[in-house]
Amino acid sequence: MPSFVSPAIAPGSLSSTAQPVLSVGSVQLRPWTGDDASAVVAAYQEPAIQRWHARSMTTEEADEWITAAGAAWAAETGASWAIDHDGALAGRMTLTFHLADGFATAAYWIRAHARGRGIAPQALGMATDWVFSVGMHRVELEHSTMNAASCRVASKVGFDAEGTRRESVLHADGWHDMHVHAKIHDVQAPGP
Image 1 (cartoon, rainbow, N blue to C red):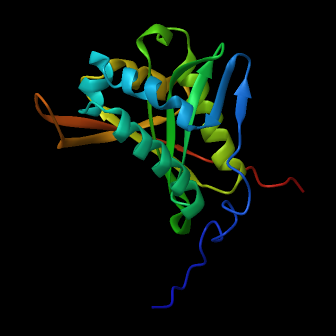
Image 2: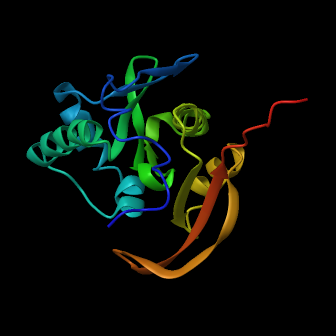
């Protein structure tokens, strides 16, 4: 069915290039590789990651997850990066794309050894700046209302709180209300 609106980001504009590597200081976002599987398994054994992401992972599942991340880039449905800090896997940053509508959804986790160092805000900021640079209009994220750390990350990066989705995600301990945050690409019109 024809649409009266052109896609916000043209199909093929992202997958025609390699997924970018982004860095600020000692924090780097890079595409996942097969060598990351054991670190991903270890990350999903950490209680906080299990609590907020409601799963664990085997080596086989980690291999499939890494393969799926590469396939998402090729299909232009997302970009998922390993977050490296000082040469070690510190976390995950993922953007799920909705190219036609010009928005992305962000998700992230940080390993226990890397928390409290400002890595999550740096990673979210880099990913958001990059996706705005390729034409995305909005980035949104949600987190459990009980996850104060994720709320602080969103606020530090300038994501406005937009509301609460009541009992919208099932975790191991029951239904969680989810805070919704978003950041809009502020494109300044050229002066006269």
